[in-house]
Length: 193
Image 1 (cartoon, rainbow, N blue to C red):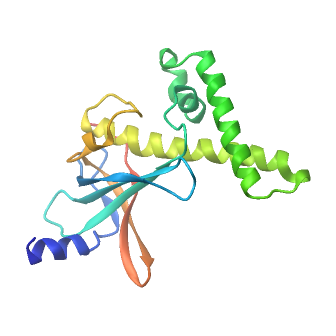
Image 2 (image 1 turned 120 degrees about the vertical axis):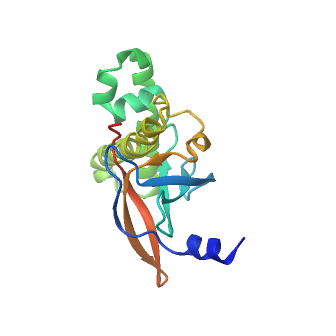
């Protein structure tokens, strides 16, 4: 690897909006194999992104998918507006299965948190809502939008490495960790090509 390439990989991409809804400003350069987070069954997906012009630097696009995130019933619960317009993608039985899967995951989190008995009901409802929100963000605002930019059909079960070299627009933010500035893609803009 050349010194210029190493410097570019270590340099954070500038913070701010890159591109527009019609003209991409970022490109996925590399897909890293998913790794399991501290939450059993939850995986973190990571892509290395750069500006698609001559701007130096890179950013990471990261999102987590909780267990069962790509189950059709779970997706219908997490993104009801999308699935209301695509009712052919799921059945009532799948939605009931999705509810059971999310309820079980919420109950597991409440149990792991040693929630007092008198607070369990409220904690279960909050965990259920939080799990669906995380799925909605990860699938709707990252996976589906990247697939739209890439010209693919929306499919949460598709291979994410197929998204390598996808050009898209997004917002990059800077985070400081151990005194080092890291660039993170915080949002993928909707595609209006």
